[in-house]
Length: 427
Ligand code: PMP
Image (tube, rainbow, N blue to C red; front, side, top):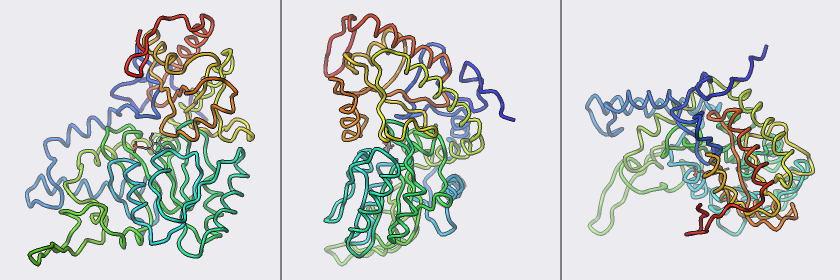
C-alpha cells in the first residue's frame, strides 16, 4: 500500500537535505540546481581527508581515490541501467557531456532534433546535416515528425537528440517511441536527461536509447560533475575531447611537435586531473535517489498536483505547454512555467523573493526558442516567463505560500515600487 506523502518540512523526508525544507525560504528552483543531500554531504566529508590525484600515485590516498572514482562508473551504470558494453565518461555537467558527444560523431553524421531543446542540447551540433524540427503540439505528431525527418537524412550515421523532460514545462518527451522510430531508420538516440534523471530516473535498456547525459547539481550533489553514458565505439574512435595527461598512453616528440598514442577507454576524454570529489558526490547522490525512488515519486506527484490545482485558480495565470493539444501530462516532472497577464515576470519574481521568501526563476530558461513560442501561444503581452520547480526540498507549505502570494499580487496589481537596476528588479 502507498505510504502517505511525507508531511510539511523537508526533514520529514527519509532523504534529508543539507538545505531546503526551510521554514523561511521556499526554494522553488530545483530545476536550476537541487540542494545537496545530507547523505552526500556526509560522504564527501568522510572522503575529504583521502582524496588525491587518480590514476597517478602509488600512495594509499591515490589508490583510494582511484578506486572510488572507477567504482563510481559502475554506480552510474546501475543508475541508468546501462548495457554491459556502455562507457561512462565523467564530464563537468550535461552541457559538457553533450558537447563531448557532438565532437565524437563520425564524419557526416546527420543529427535530428526538436527546436525547443535546452541550449545545451540545441547548440553543439554542427555540419551540413542538422535538422531542427518545430516541436509539434502532440506527442504522436512529434514521433511522426521524427520519422519523416530521419527518412530524409542522407545515407550514413544518424543521431536523434532529445530531452527526456523539458526544463521549461516539465513535460516528458515520448522517448521510448522516438527510440523505436530511430531504430527503424538505423539512427542512434541521445537523451538529455538533465531534468528527467533527478525525478524519474532513466533506463537505457528500457527506453532503448544509446546515450544519456546528466548533471550532478540537478541530482542533489554539488556542482562540477556530470556524465555521458552510452555506446563506446564512436567515443573510442573520436579525437580526445581535451589533449593532455591521462588521455595519452605514450607521448613522444620529434623536436617540433609532440605526438600521442591516446587511451581508448573513458580516460581518453578525461584529460587533466579529474574532479574526484565531485564524481564521488554524484555517485552517492545517484545511489541514494535510486534507493528512494518510490518516495521521491510520491512526494513530487502530490506536490505537483497541489501546485497545478493552486495555479489554475489564480486569475490571469497561463501555463506554458509544449504538447498542449495532448492536455496535461500526468507524468510531467515538477516544473511548471507560466505567465501572469499584465505582470512582468522579472518584477513578479523579485516580489516573490523579497516579500514572500520564495525563490523562482524568470526569463527564458536557456531554452529561448521554446519559451518564446509558448509565451506567444498564451496571447499575453508578457515577454518572459516565470518557472516554479519542485523537488525533495519542497514542502506543501512552500507551494501554498506561492499560490497565496500570486493571488495577493494579482489582486493588488503591479503596485509595489521596484526599480530595474542592472537588468534586475529590486525593492
Ligand atoms: N538540459 C536541460 C534539459 C537542462 O535543464 C539543463 C540545465 N538547465 C541542461 C541541459 C544543462 O545542464 P548543465 O548546466 O548542468 O550543463
